[in-house]
Image (cartoon, rainbow, N blue to C red):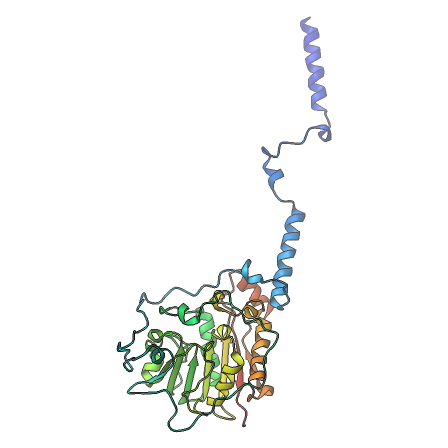
Amino acid sequence: MIDQHRRNRQKTEQQIAWVSPSTLAPPSRLTSGRRNRPSPMLMMKLHVLLLVLVAHEMQGTAAFSFPSFLRRSRRPLKPTTTSTSPTPAPGQTVGLRTATTPAEVSDSWYRRGRASSTSTSNVAIRRAPIGLVKSLDRSKIDTRPDSMFYTEPKFVIHIDSPFVQKLKATYQDHLVQNGTILDLCSSHVSHLPTTLKYRRVDVHGMNLEELRSNPWRSITQGQAMVRDFNDNPSLMGLDSAEYDAVLCTVGIQYIQNPEAVLAEVRRVLKPNTGKCIISFSNRFFYQKALTGWIERGMLERTGLIKSYFAAAGGYDMDSIEVVGDGSGFLQQLMSAGGIGGDPFVAVIATADGE
């Protein structure tokens, strides 16, 4: 009996040892870590899909807004100060003059020692654009007036150090010695090279506290202006043919009527030699940027700015220059992945002789 039992057990073990793996029941999904992993084919498809989306974004042909859900956050860099002083109230001393009404604070030019809301040496006539870019969605996510968004000063650097160095090198190559400069959409910093001398640096922005802190304005005794271009897209208050260069750093994406603003920029530039330099990246306040800007890639944004100049009129379109590699595929791919820094592009237009 014992021998018979032993033989039966050996026979059963042999049968179990030689069972084909294909006949076994599949392991439980709850206990098998391997079955929980995505298949290599699925992972390859996901990577291909991501690359296709990135490539479409670079060419500005994506059917939806790539930055809104895949691109890394492009928040401004860390604040350089903790100042939270509000915009001066009516009657409060603002350093350059005493404000009397909110309108004076928000829509006037200030120069150390005097103020000018209208030109005295040359009667200026507002210049109108010659056209309009029609293929542009000018709506914004945040529909509140920009003056509300910028009520509190934002002492931040909006782009990283490599971008700033490329920008300074561009200014070094295109600005003249002892030139008169107008910095639009500025703040407490104007990224000007210290190797050049400036006759005067005037600054425009949305917060007077920031503009008062701009060292280049202070050193050159320049003017400061707070004006919402989306409410009043003009530079009335400035003399015509006054500036050697007008700069706009990472600010063009917020202006809803850039054609009108650039037409006025042309008016204040010196004919034949005056230059307008517009630089941009993919770091900005998304909620205040134009939807048509967000939907475009860096290369298509470059073309959009050229269209702005053409619609504004008064610029030599044959001599427009594009500086920087920020519209290149590799640079944008690295930036989207969080390893390439802020891509840099500057579009430079020269005033014509008319």
